[in-house]
Length: 391
Image (cartoon, rainbow, N blue to C red; front, side):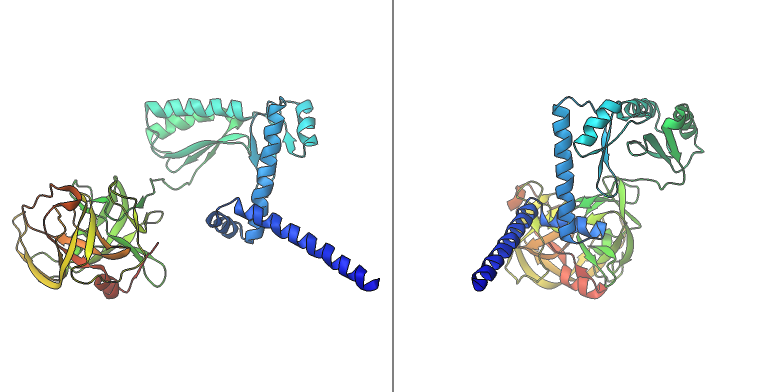
């Protein structure tokens, strides 16, 4: 009897553990693993705790949805830092109903509807004249205010904007000393990048990092200038180049990638196929199939012809000729502006466009007939001591 009782107890415990494990598995399967890992890292908790937080969040949202179906006309809701949902109620009666459902409730001084009206007024003001120096304004439900963030309040437009905002008294919180904002971009290799503040362009090469994790753009050396822009926004600063007009050169260079921007680990194909994941930089043998992504001719393909080529480039602007060594040759068609763009064979990154015939035109799309030279990527990574970012 004792042995049987022990056996039954063990079965009950095992069953409970199995049930808990099954519940954990179901919860985990509801969320993308990448999202769970990122949330856990940002909160400084375990992945299990991150999943539990997501579960609690979903449960609270579901309760609020039920209350709304039941006639609760809440005036906004927000999660606090601990993950607890607070609901804005209209009166004590609604507060009681919300709290009975297990949620936190409050009757705010203003609420979402009033704050939305204040923000809409500021939006209309900004539509008439951009308030340069005012970096952002938004409804903050937790503080029950419209928050206005300011970098520089000395411009005439900023002064007029802030004066209008101040008329709303305690409903607006003006926060000074904020950083300026700019668009942030994740840029595909092969995308168009312009030089400094001109309309001249090259194409984006590959992203890589040094031993400390600092991010770089690896490109053709003649594409490296002071400031590189993507869609008008400065995303990289020229750092080192081995290209010098009129002097025997190597056409490789790197630029530091500005904070907040990144070079993706997939090569853009200009709509021909899905972006190609970059999984390494193993050099393809001569004769291997290869494609390149560039801002002028898009996605063109061919084969590798040979390595260790030395060429003489003529400067179209009347400058001296330049001898460039260490290039690979290919039957891939390129035109002006494709320079720096990404060559890839299978999933292995190969290099960046260096040059091609002066008057070449790529009129046949992907299979355009032509030729080009590219700077092998593995040589550039080795020379600068960088590691390719891979997918």
